[in-house]
Length: 167
Ligand SMILES: O=P(O)(O)OC[C@H]1O[C@H](OP(=O)(O)OP(=O)(O)O)[C@H](O)[C@@H]1O
Ligand code: HPA
Ligand SMILES: [Mg+2]
Image: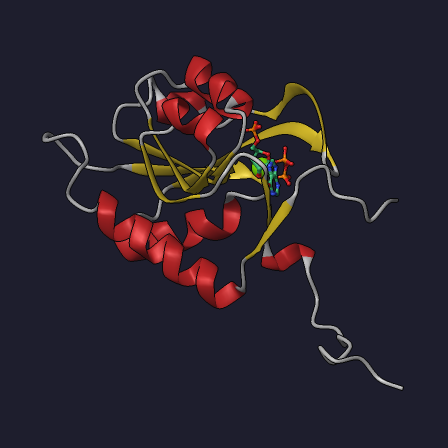
């Protein structure tokens, strides 16, 4: 394992910030579902989409929640996206009224696979990078392409040296 980042900048997101941003996403989506029936299900893209999907489902009072599992990274190295597990397609249909939620879109390759599965679903992420933006229907915060977003489940509190150092 290496500590070296392929990106110049780090954007560190706390649980509190993630909660606020996922709530903001839910509020943005509220009332924007199809006129006949609104949002009827949430599909979380595992694993990173599960925490924001839970918050969005809670805010919008949606109790039908499924998952799609797409693996596209090993640590910070991208490989060809693979569908490991599909949602219940009897429930999802073509995706009308379905909210697909992920933590972020980066290159957009994960969401390309999702769109093939559920062409009419609404895809929402909390964070977005410019290259992936065309793949996402709603998001809250954009960061630059050379930023790596660190999520709270990948971090821990730890000691840092004082700014002026110690003798
Ligand atoms: O837009 P892309 O370039 O495809 O990248 C975005 C995807 O990559 C990460 O998931 P990852 O595949 O690492 O799995 P994880 O959610 O289980 O961490 C992230 O959670 C998004 O799902
Ligand atoms: O910036 C990122 N942070 C965490 N996971 C990711 N997967 C793709 N891009 C990112
Ligand atoms: Mg993911």
